[in-house]
Length: 274
Image (cartoon, rainbow, N blue to C red; front, top):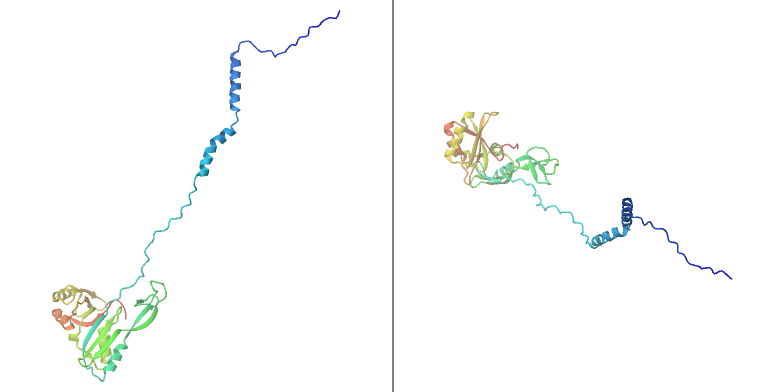
């Protein structure tokens, strides 16, 4: 009789620790759980956070670079120009002018010149050599006529002179040129026109205030100033006449009590050299 064997399937399962958890086991389980959380993929999270920011930057309009600020507009510099002195017109009453010497008298006065140093490019003129203050070029020396116009009239014995501006004209030079042709100036009727300097002889330094007062009281000039010239022992009065210039005779009458006489009359800037 055959033995019957009972076959049974037995599942072998790992043994589990069914003992109650201890404190150390709880701590180990907590650490394991924490590590699992930390091991989550962080790169996708970073991309997730940076995605909106990158999209915002991509859609942001790029502003064009601001153009450099233009300098404030400034008015163009005006060229420096010197104001020319107004031309002085002298009407001299003379003796000895005839139709025979008319041309000689005109020619003699027209031949009078003065030295000037000029820059043609800048239209600048000086009385002494140097450089042009505008372009720094060397000033060119030249001779220029002393009068812009010479008009002798024998009929009424007058010579009308228009003085060129910006230089010195001395009465003594005019008288010297006229004497060559036997013509003389009627000194009493000589007009002291425009800006002139009276050279007075016979005074002292302490006489300045008395000279100014005498001329001011006579109301002969619109402006005047007296100064002492120690180098020549002379009083020099710078005066500017009005529309009706006084004559030399009236000026001498005003200062007659001071025992002064007019040695010369200088028109123009007396500080310049002719």
